[in-house]
Length: 288
Length: 263
Image (cartoon, rainbow over all chains, first blue to last red; front, side, top):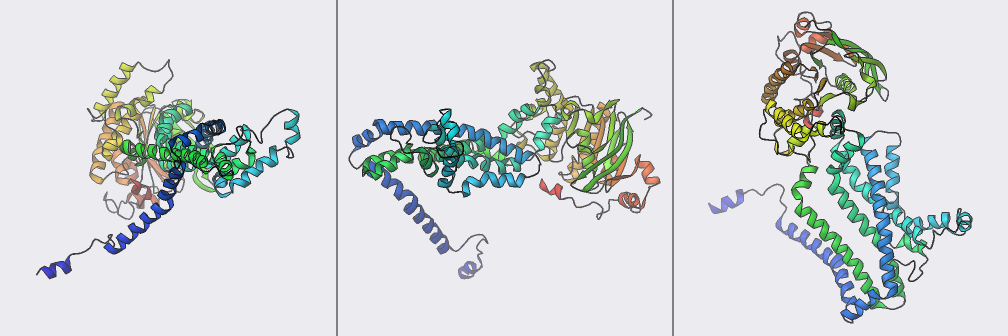
């Protein structure tokens, strides 16, 4: 009897064989440990190899402080501007019909497909001393390349798609009904945006800001081309790590690198916290 | 009826890309009338409604309503209460906030004081039989309840015209029938000129004072349900309202509308 019962007990159609399941989980876990966890541990271990005081000294010496400051300033300018641009672009693309819309979407994605080094070089070609606008900028004493403006421009270019990428699907999915309802109820464009559109996308916007910020602070390639690597002046944190590493100052390099790693961890923590704490609200907004 | 023809629509035309959605539609309806725009999907009835609401623009033609050049008014100045098939409630606001929205977004000079708005919201909640649900969010309501909130929200601005786009299309048959009668009741109580879009001939014939039957962007016939039943103007009309079956809805004609499945 018990034998028959065992044979007849059906396995749910969606459940895989236990062995397959275990194997898949094991592969995923191995991957995470090997490629994500291990490097992270290494970074912190290397930084603390000669003790905490050495590590702290490495990140408090003037060049490091200058690099940290520059990174914060560049991200502090690039992220808000990209939030505004990304929001405008998503708004236009998801709520209006116009010619060349698909082309615009492709264009927004461009920074993802172009190598950051190339995007950096473009700015050098345009604004550099030998570039198109070089003579004009020199005559008017405006410095863009090898200075803060160039770093901000390069950072903005690289992080441009983050906000739009996050918001376009969300806003398209939410449709235009609520905006149309608001208009028919007498709300102006601005009031519709502030009272209806913005509250509906605030979580998406926050995610986008977090991701955009993490990338802005961590960007290496594009910034490397336009910065000029002037120590204590135009080095951002990732560039400072490279300089230190090339000087065989491994502990210092890893100390600064661990700061960047911590930024990533904080980003992740905030994101998880938001998802966990506001799960109901986020679900309500995504659900129609 | 006998009241003056206050809604006059003259040769409204509209194309989407090159596909003509409306091919010069003209009709008129008296003040306080309950007009149904009836037709299969793709007949242009929703486009016509959206043009009346200012959410879509006509390429040619004009609309006069209560002696106003209706189409030259921007949507937000028309005070046309619009009710959508998918409710379009503001999902991050409570029911009460949804209903109050149209009053709260008014300019400082025309906005009623807060207490007055609260009182109006309570009144409207009672009117749509949702007393006590003001603090809920739309996602916590049933489909029928949501649509009643949407109607209350549209009524809050004291609309000059009420426009309903398949308001019961996403609801099940029973709720649909209940709400239908209730909507007619509200219309009779408020006397607001109402335009109602539907593809359900039974709904249109039971509910409306005037029924306009649209087909491929043109009006086939407009008249009272009795007139249309007695003398259908064309083969299409006769077929669509299904006279042979004597008021029984024809399952073939209760057309498949993919929009109804989005609920």
